[in-house]
Amino acid sequence: MGSVSDQESEQVLLEQVLDSFDESANPRLVEVVRAAVRHLHAFVEETGLTREEWMTGIEFLTDTGKKSVDSRQEFILLSDTLGVSMLVEIVNQMATDVATDATVLGPFYVPDAPLMEMNAFIGREGDDVAPLTLAGTVRSAKGGVLEGAVIEVWQVAPNGLYDVQDAKGVFPNFRATFRTGADGTFSLRTSRPIDYQIPTDGPVGTMLKATGRDSWRAAHTHFRVSCDSYKTVVTHVFDASSPRLHSDAVFGVRESLVVDMSGPTATFDVTLDEV
Ligand code: BEZ
Ligand code: FE
Image: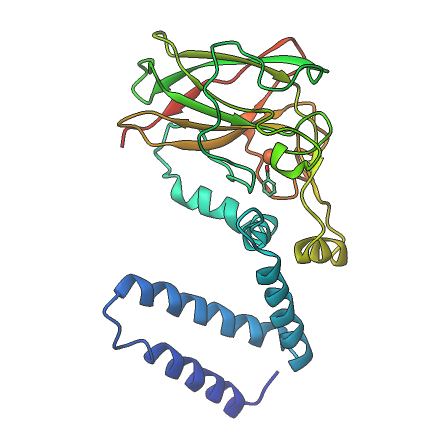
């Protein structure tokens, strides 16, 4: 523990940095930056961070930036594996919401996947190794069914890779768009999703290994559901039989999103809030 004068100089330094934003014309930016500064200073004080550890952190973040390209966002993966992305989802979902719970978007969403007919198979021939129909109804928070809601789905193929990761595979694969019918229902055919590993060939993988962390995600299919005049929901439906529901690498599992996928058909109803 530092002496009284050390603590005073740390406090003086913090106040100086916080005051340095006084002239900004953007109050929200200042609020966020000041909070970040307060937490960063507290982190350095709490851990007694050494110069070497500070430099290791700088190098880690530099490597994270270098690994990030359009098709691979290592900073989002870092946010995901530290539970920050999930916290952002929870904080942004108001307590009064009756809408379907949100979870992380993940790095493998691609907009404008092909529109398919009701009940179409979203993979390629031969990939229906564990046939599963996912079906449900999209409703408004007031209870009425929503016709024409757009359902975008994506998941790993039975080889444990997303189409965008698989240099030997085809694109799109296990990725499609559907629209609900007049009764608000949708139905699609897929292969039962499996547990898979998030990318570990970058700094985030190094961090997971160094800290004894698991890199597996609980089996899921991603959903992005949108409809005019309603708030879009980005979520997953999880397989209740996955052994990783309680050790998901990105902390994305929410109780309300877990369904029984052991039969030929699994039901996943979605509720959207009005804008
Ligand atoms: C995914 O579910 O696709 C995913 C989410 C976060 C990090 C990596 C993958
Ligand atoms: Fe995923």
